Image (cartoon, rainbow, N blue to C red; front, side, top):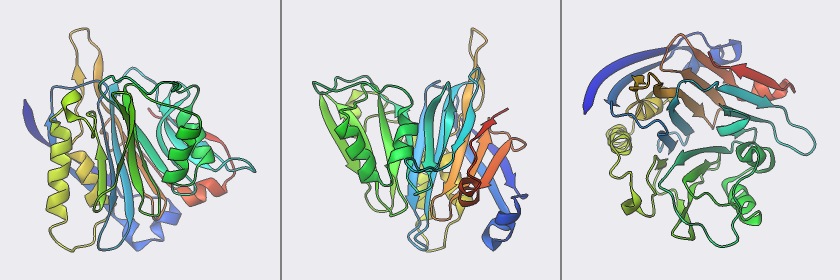
Length: 293
């Protein structure tokens, strides 16, 4: 069942560096939501988007999961062998993030598939390692190929500051790479190269795509507000299961890759917002852990 709701998230008090930018002084994100109440605890919605009018590049994501995990943001400064990076997740595992070179990634669970022979399951904190070593989408794809890493139940979306983006997934024992077409690339929880495998059609994907089409019918420049509202069409409100477990959109991230601006909203709560200028953050040369609570 689908219900209608409205949530307003206000980003009025950015730090001093953001306040110097006219376009960021009054960033108000009004989420007019089409909420899907039959929650899947491992759902995820990811969008990489290029504004055709300005050329600005954005990445937004909803992480839908159980509320009993302890998520946090991890910031690692650059050094001689690793790029500065920010990732978000829990249990020492990056669910998504971005590095100082403007490479973004996020992942989503998909129907289980066989992988090519000789493939290795990811070990350790794969996302952190990719962000530490790779500057572009092609770097990331090469990294996975060189290490023969495959996922049997998920796909990854990579996007960079050059306008390149791709989803990599493994279907029926074969690697599939889906490249960006036109000005956006999306991923939810069905395999883009084999929709018959399950989780399709996807109401979240359809709602986001409909909003993209609506916004791009005009040549009006878009901001993080409007792009964020695309992902807002796919958020999932808190649901309590029969076993009293809470689940829903754990956090939503909004990234202006072109200007390196980052915003995270925790549990759809406009009082629990984390925002930062990533260029200034990486200049601090300081490792940080920001607990989301």
